Image 1: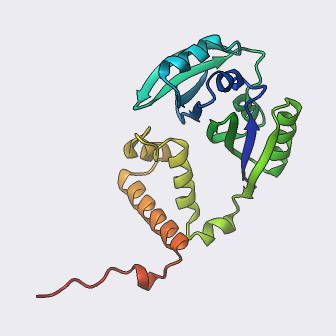
Image 2 (image 1 turned 90 degrees about the vertical axis):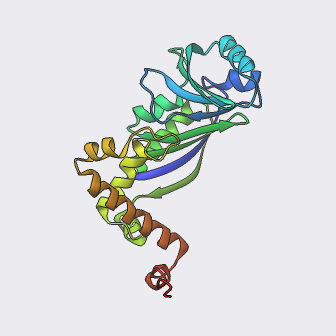
Length: 222
């Protein structure tokens, strides 16, 4: 049964600890999609010159290249040295998928999808053995009952997961609706309708409203 684990990891001992030591106000956020062999990280907080000075001095970082920028943050493609503890790679080696990752004050928060809870335990042990002090913040299973409780059909659930994985909900979007429909092998119209129904199911479930409450009011007449 697929599980989601939110795990806190201290930056100490990882490839980013020197960055937080050099610029304590630094914040990092993983870029969902980037075509490279390294990691796409949005860096913000200090000035860009301070960020690049820290990148240059960090012995755990092999190479870095600026990919993009957005107001007061900058996207870098960063490759760590081979002997560096890389939590991203540890997650992949345990068969997991990093759904999101962000860091501030020297602490990373990873949201990870794994095959089952046994994989979570194995991942925890790997991180603990690497001395990065993991803490399980939240752990839950993506059971079919959870989908029905939210009012989602299996197809709607799978579509939303695919949309998240491909960056459809990112700002800006990393995949168009047409591209996502081709990935799912359904028509653009079918995808649009499925997403709208899924949105409605999630909203009515979270707001705990009835069908009568969500019904549109009658149009005023003259």
